[in-house]
Length: 246
Ligand code: PGA
Image (cartoon, rainbow, N blue to C red; front, side):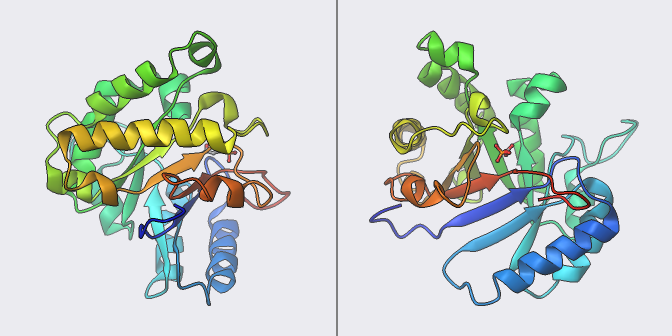
């Protein structure tokens, strides 16, 4: 971020937390908290049941709303899924795709992430495309190879315009919810690799794509992470407080 003109972007991923009432209350807190913040994009990703109510509360203000996942078809016999157009109708401007919890716990494959990212773009949403290695992949020296494979597949058949409307999030799986964040240097190495990889296909677009870091981002480590050249923001889960999601 250090010398770039990319606008910082922060997204709170509330995961499976919060009633509708709690989520609307938290969204109001976020809106009030960033009322004077002009130099960053701020987005919240509530649980699905709360998306519409949160979007209505935040309408017309600076805080955007994101889905946490979507299906790749727009409609049909897909019980339990939600489509990108449905999220858009509910007030979302963004959707997270390929979060590691979905990859690991729900068996989501790289190819599905690609279909979801493209469905999001079709619906006019900005996909936040997540990539990241597991601890065993890092220990085996496979970090960049794994990230490369996830990224390349996620971007299959993507156009330059599609990438220009997307964000990428690097989230090392070993750092998510563990309190153990990547060091700024570790994050920068992978962020730079991602940008280089994007530039190989879309040289005109890659310099402007915002690449977020996620995994135990906290007030005491965000500044050092953001000081790195290719770290443009954060995807933040965080501790669940009694009675609210954060
Ligand atoms: P964390 O989660 O901030 O709790 O590590 C980040 C994420 O899952 O996006």
